Length: 96
Image 1 (spheres, one colour):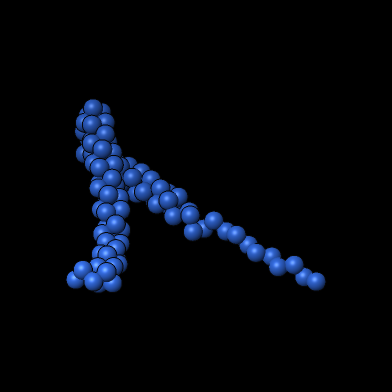
Image 2: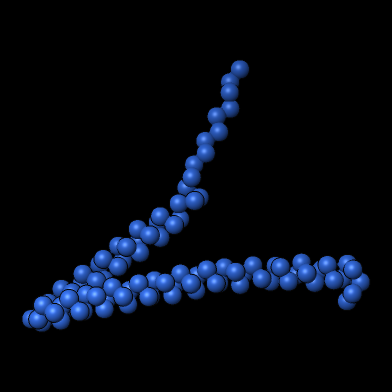
């Protein structure tokens, strides 16, 4: 008799890793290009440092806002299904 081999892969739960890697890559590239652009304009060291920090903060805020909107839209998508279930229960109970 042959035994059945069931493979269990965790690829469904790895979406957060993909988002983290792509987000970090985007942050590194955009911040580095911003710093190189300012440095190539012969700015002072303090201006280059300030620009890099401002770019990092702006990028972090942008990523946080994008993630918030993404999570919020997922909960909004579930709301119509929940209200439809609630309305159906009202009809079944004869309250509507």
